[in-house]
Image 1: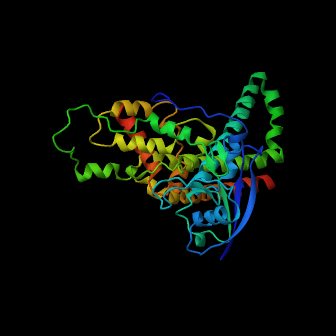
Image 2: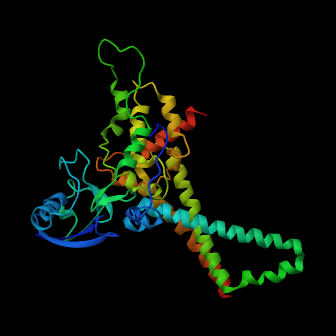
Image 3: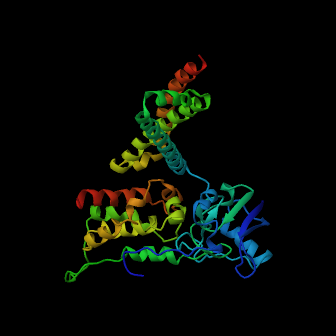
Length: 231
Length: 141
């Protein structure tokens, strides 16, 4: 089938502001948006710039706005979108070129929550064991692939500097980990002015997450933990 | 960057349209975003009326004559229609406020986020439609 891709283009060397260009490509209904983008780049316009790596929904490189919602181009099928598809870069970040945005602020937010296991107890002779129930608490938030779909879907993030959903999800992942010992430090970070309290439970993040993580639920769990444990 | 701070993003042509209020136009709003936008708009509307209300109560200080003279503003048709909109805003803001409280304090509320919003719409209509009927009837008479 034939589909028309309306893609937002921006070349920092020649353009002063972004504009749209249309491309018509021949694809199968079961192809993914990424296949259509590849068609454009490989056979029509080599200057089209976008990120993709694994192309199987694991690396999180090809997050973009597809028909106005944040999605991974490698997970959305053409048949679910229809013959006209609009593709734009993620909101809230500086556009470097076409669909590539500067994700450095996003990773800075991620680093701010100390996304690693902190445990100064002497290491056990074998692995640090968890019960299935303890593992269940971090099951959902361990699935994050840092694609930035959630953070750049957040209306608060578009206008305000704050941690954003992805960083909180990764904070949650260690906060609720039975092996982690930095609970107080992490709660203190998440309890700051730019922390979890900026969340207005809009649920855009949950809707956008390609991994199906209940992002708003995770943020609410952190809020309740701060409220009930620190007061 | 040190732990526990959030970077300030640079502003300029490359972020134009992607940051700030302009970004709202770029996203096809899911139900949750609509509920939030309506909550903000109605909240600001009610605040605006409250400020006006404070001013008119303050005018009592200038004597009952001044106060009564200025009451014509409240009888003006434009203001009467504005009052109906205010009531709509109040009903929505109150009902959605309860929804937000539920999401904050009820562990399982996140599973019914959309259904709760439809509940808000139902409560809003059940409250607003009869109220609007009586207000319009009083206005027409």
